Amino acid sequence: DGKKVAEAVKKDLKKRISKLGFKPGLAVVLVGDNPASELYVKLKEKTSKELGFHFELHRLDKDTDELALLNLIDKLNQDKKIHGMLVQLPLPKQIDEKLIIDAIRPDKDADGLSPMNMGNLLSGNNKVIPATPKGVIKLIESTGIKIEGKRAVVVGRSNIVGKPVSVLLQQKNATVTMCHSKTEPLEEHTKQADILVVAAGKPRLITADMVKKGAVVIDVGINKVMGKSIGDVDFDDVKKVAGYITPVPGGVGPMTIAMLLENVLQCIWLQGKLKT
Ligand code: NDP
Image (tube, rainbow, N blue to C red; front, side, top):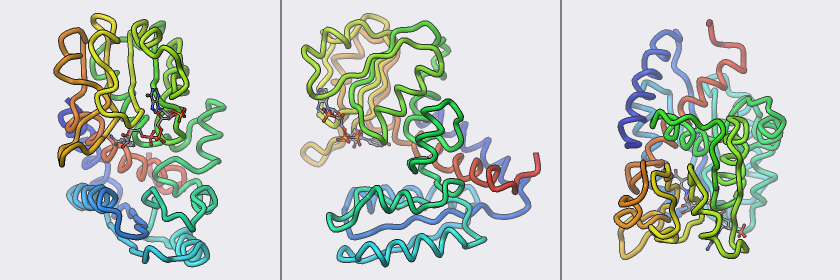
């Protein structure tokens, strides 16, 4: 139950924020008017305000060029009220995503996607961990099942989800297999998994016959099908064999926001502004 686990994280965050003596500041940059991005940004704004954050939304037109966006990031990098920031992805085609993310100060990179934070993660020197992968690990740990020594299979190898999830699971001493669109046959791998994390963006890709009995199944996917959000896992089918399974919605989604806000506190700590 991602909502329940996220509530516990938020409760703890609220306590930590009350002891800060100042409002943690989060800035979100939204370029264009992608409806899914609008929704995610709204949820981030709502939750951060509930927890007592100073929240800023910076909207830029869909035709914005790289220079305008880089100038805004530069301003936010220097803004003392802002402790963490993120640029909502995806960006319009004329903008080089890597260039933009690289411009964010690593100690203000609330999404943990900058090359510095990704490199640190890869070398085991975790600084800011990407929010969704961090939420995935918290959800697995909420089952009480030990990750160490387990066989974990991650479906998807994106920089945002699949790759960092695999690294985090390895750090926790799981034996990890990474699958992607060229993996043939997929079920040969997924069936071996004690822990199965799916982030492929393919509705109901995983069915019960592809899952080991008792497995922990974490569904990261969010797919819009006939106006409804559904996951990459066929929930009703797979719940018959899985030991634990996350729903969509109400699984990884709420965790991503809670972890993002936790990352802002991590940024404050990296900036040397936390008295603990
Ligand atoms: P990407 O499209 O960047 O990556 C998808 C990955 O899945 C790729 O590595 C791709 O392989 C692999 N893949 C695609 N089809 C298959 C298949 N049939 N079998 C095996 N692997 C396959 O997506 P993201 O990682 O950004 O996101 C994945 C899903 O998670 C999306 O539905 C997205 O909306 C959701 N998401 C949810 C979040 C949340 O908070 N809950 C946060 C972020 C994402 P290849 O590399 O070969 O192309």
